[in-house]
Image: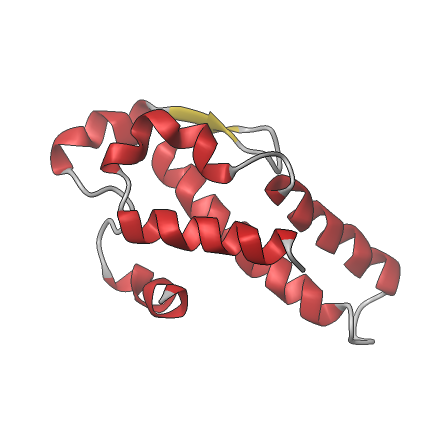
Length: 118
């Protein structure tokens, strides 16, 4: 299910927030990124969770390759993994969960489980 959802994310105008009436929340609700520490809007944070998962998958494959210096690959792989290890990603947006797509919540939870169990 997650692969289907992720492949269709770009086709939908706003796949993350399910209520148009909660535009204020999606623009002004701030979340600190577990990867960078930056303060992000709700929409940006949700998008970042998917981007960091994609980067994690990329660097995981690169670990088995000789295309990049191994120490740099290990550094990037560790950085990607680190955010997933700092508590449940959805706990950071618990107050906003009613407006976040349940499909997206499932994908983020699954992505975090994949990272933590690999």
